[in-house]
Image (cartoon, rainbow, N blue to C red; front, side, top):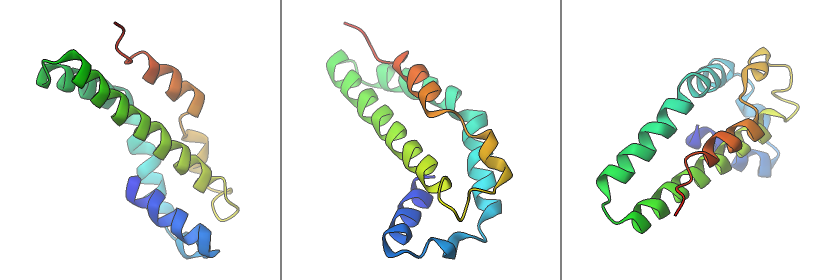
Length: 112
């Protein structure tokens, strides 16, 4: 998804987003893959980092950085798919709501 967002944003800046119009299969795979695995992946990330970094402050910083990037790239993904070239894709209805993602991610914010 990160590569797709970076590529799409670069094309958007140049006004060439139509070059990705034929990527419906790739977009469908990204949306469905993310939708089906994001919760488990966030949980696994959180557990792995806390297990790997015995310094709680370092582990917390790493988790927060990773989750912040997740939100930023997913927001970018939503933004790309809201462009005219992709508005008619049926798979857009399967996107996870960005607010819902943010609420769930906040559950993994370690508390002191």
